[in-house]
Length: 328
Image 1 (cartoon, rainbow, N blue to C red):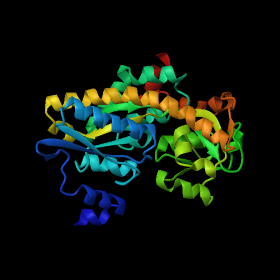
Image 2 (cartoon, rainbow, N blue to C red; image 1 turned 30 degrees about the vertical axis):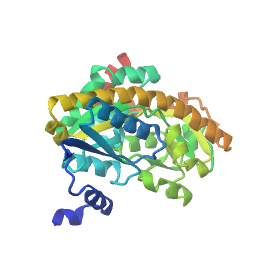
Image 3 (cartoon, one colour; image 1 turned 90 degrees about the vertical axis):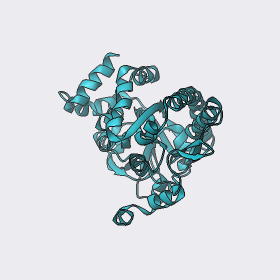
Image 4 (tube, rainbow, N blue to C red; image 1 turned 90 degrees about the horizontal axis):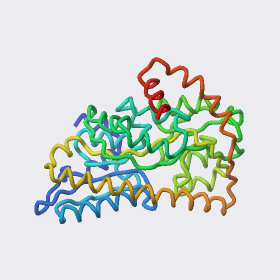
């Protein structure tokens, strides 16, 4: 009872939704994996999850199924990670940034300007470095399944365009709930303000924050462009989405079921990357058509502004990881 009193209301709601359903809830020997996330159902990541579920059903000849709870029905990303850790939820999708609160090495993805381009980004994710980061979350009762493309994060603002870090001075910018993301935005000159994704539209509307930073599909599908009319594509970080399973759930699957999950997930990664590229292009076209001013700033001043941040990491585990990435 003490536990119930300390849990947020939204998590309690999620637990009641899942009540009576174990991770591997079986009906006629069918394994049902329950997957929660925070995104809109039109998002390419949600569509990839649907594809994953469809492929898993086919590969398993109907022995396995996926039930998806979108739109933060089961809580924030952090809250759903906690549900995974206690075995009350089978799967979730989180940005790598808040994951650093559980698996510290994941902070590498919130370090600005460590990837040269999108090809370099995927080279790293598919390398031993990327695979080791996924495997490392097992120490925290999680099973890393795959990376989904989440593009690059850029600033969008209510009242003025961002052409250089100097324009960010004095502005309150919403960031992910990640110490590294907070530091990145501070290094670029703004006041970093963590706000949950579900509350951000209202925070922009009421002036609690002056802007935020995210990728084009999230900017468009969240309808934040209705308020924040300037979008500056400085692309300061490339933070992947991470597909996670409860380690308890994974270990309760037999080897054949684990293989089906791994195969269906690998196929969904290919599907999602293609869908992401199309969604990014469409999102930018839609917001421009609506009158949003899209800025393509010189990235040089932004890169210079975060050099002290990079220098401060020399001699640390993260600093060594940055050197590995830059050498690829």
